[in-house]
Image 1 (tube, rainbow, N blue to C red):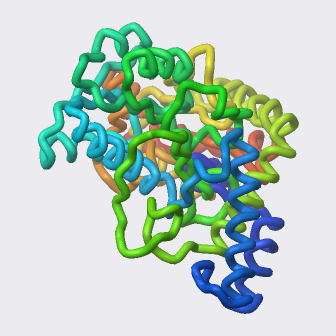
Image 2: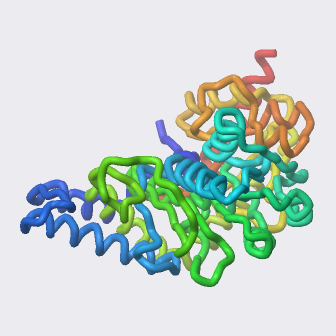
Length: 384
């Protein structure tokens, strides 16, 4: 059976050059980057070189980059760390949107429930975008932090983070951006943007799982969540994952070099996929979200009249990997909170599937996969 992996928004296959870079570290002599001997210094060299590569790619100083275990930790470290630091200044109000990843939403809700912060969850429009005007209206003298993602992981909509950032800066509010889905697609120059904190993840850009980063603009108040060591400038205690960080840096370097060619090709795949679904599906196919500004590798569509879970099981049986939404909620019966926040109709929410493309996908395989989807839809409908 020919298999098609269309779930790159959940995790991406590791690039061969990334695996090679990591293997060299893992097969080399061991060393703790905090040790003073030659082995420790070698590990420290890997760490510093990787930090230089990633920070140069996103336009910040090496000292402004904190390595983490992934996007979820980066979001938690940013939101909890900044909120607690701002509370000491008398600011206890948090703002986020209903379309955020649960790593942001659940963290903000936990702070409201367990630590006494007040929380405003802003609505999104029909394509999943957060209006800057709504953000501005929500800011109060007590607002400590605003957290708005750059690109939505379920529908691909791009948020107006620069405009929101300027509003936050004018009000003295810390601004955090979840950029887990966007690192590969934007030429970030963070030293020129009104952003205080930005979260990244390695396994979304063909790097290893279990590695991420958090940009912390110089002067941003942030309390560490982990204690017990002086690693990462005393902002995250614990021995660094050197091999993983080297792999992350290699993936970032590849992203920078391939972005100009990869972005238009992914957009071509996305547009062709929508055309093929209309041609082969045999039921109305509606695109959810995106709007005018969208990530080129994500498309969320509803196969009207075909239940999401039934569709996903049949896709899997035919060797097609897709998703119903965030991978962090896979297996749950709950329908997409993003689509519900967009106030889509029940029939669209209950028939939505996310396809996301990346390394290894081709135009030719889309033809085969679309034909299989046509057979799947007919099979499902004939069984009802």
